[in-house]
Length: 278
Image 1 (cartoon, rainbow, N blue to C red):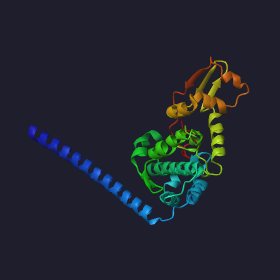
Image 2: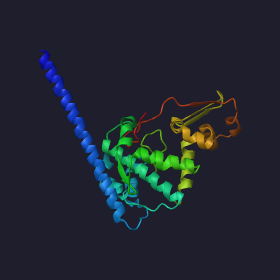
Image 3: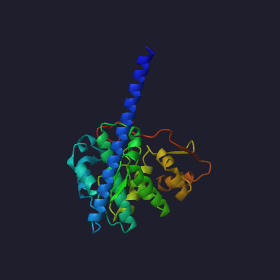
Image 4: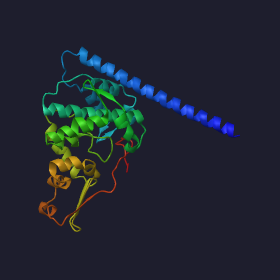
């Protein structure tokens, strides 16, 4: 009896080891193919291209409305794979406006692609590891969604002391700033960012000021990105108050005002089919 149990245990252990080895091999091969493709792209492109989001704009026109995405149909749309392919080419990003708009568009598109591939996923919590594990080729470089958000966007924005364009990103959850159905353009990026901030801050789902209780409560979006807001603005509440529309703004600067973050964050996917998501 003991011998049979031992044999069965050894068989299970062997299967696990083989499975892990195969997974590691597949992962390494995938990364190898990505590296080869990157070398080819960077070697074959003697002229650096201008960013091209024509297919992505077509995708937005067709499948994005009111900040919601029709993932059920993007999942099978050829526009999505074509838009992802347009990301691969090395590009000329010679101004901050071109830089930010490119990487924000890339980030938002990668989010749509990842959610579409995992649809009908309901919450972003189920994709947390995917955002850091899955790799894309963007501008001739290999990067994950998390790489783009942290390294290409947040870190650069802090170094240039301008965090506002981050409100043009959408991580695919209903608690994040809404996804526009227009690509981010270098010509309008700062105006669009101001509009996005005003819309986000003046949405009661994200900011509530109670004059009677003398409390202001803001979205955990600001807490999630707390280090960056603190670095540039000292306090995310200061940032919020600047954009909050209230007839007696001086009340908001009262030192007696108590400041809170919402206890919950809406991680539900911004799915067009999910109209009443919580």
